[in-house]
Length: 399
Figure 1 (tube, rainbow, N blue to C red):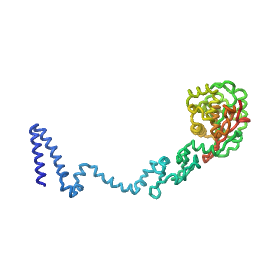
Figure 2: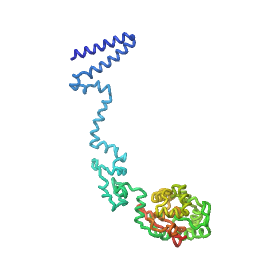
Figure 3: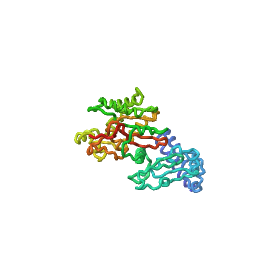
Figure 4: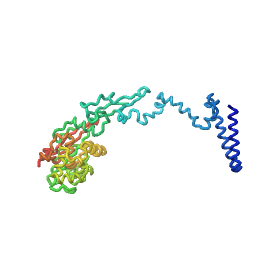
């Protein structure tokens, strides 16, 4: 065998030399050197004797030529990963939040490490089964010293991470709002450590309702008188839409409370188009169906014209949790008074009362009164209590 192999190699060398002689001395020497390197390599690789004896494994030449195989030690250390020692020592899993990540719920699994052992649980292990009987229910569970909240989704009957809309929906259901209460009562009953968000329709205006149109004389008086009933040592934070009459309502209420000269921040999200998603469609519906009050109330209570409006729960939550509550927290005060308009306040009242308060202007001619709206008490532990509130004798006006 060895003689045969040497004969083949000699033939290759001679052939290479013949080719070199036919193309010039310089190029032949370069080709011969390249060929010799290949041949030397082939001497090891093609040798059946070396492979059969497994001596190629011990061959430093192969490893050194690739060099990557010198790092085989790293591959061998995979055994440490298998024992989870390396994960615990460098905390890769915890730092990436893969283990015990609340987002793992999307795969309907919750993972944790117990005594250096990777444990995977179905969500039901912690929360029980999600059924029609407990749909929309929110449950909290402590995992790895962190409290997580999940909701039993009504549409899928699967547990998923609870969001702000889910939380507000749960608190609204628990609040069971069916009628208006006096705003004065809610403010007076506020306990130490609690925060209060109040959102009202502005006081009485005249026949014009553009952005620059003011309150009428009765509206100024209403605002100041309501402010007097809310007087106390606790300073209020004030926020108003971009409309003049909203700021006037805040200013006169502040005067009534004794906060002379207090000015409201302007919050554009309190403008009267907050719930309108498609203005062109909304204007068309309004022009063809008896005006904005009929269109808005039919959207709320009959699910009509839905393409012109945002989702009620989602948009209400966005206003509260995205703008009003953060504004109050930033002020570092405990009570925030926000003034808006009927086309914002009617949907909010319908939302917090689960539509049990009748504002069906299209059929009953009932509409939200001036200085009426909602209030949200936020307890120190985060629990919320919702109210429909009135600043005048009634929260409803009839037209």
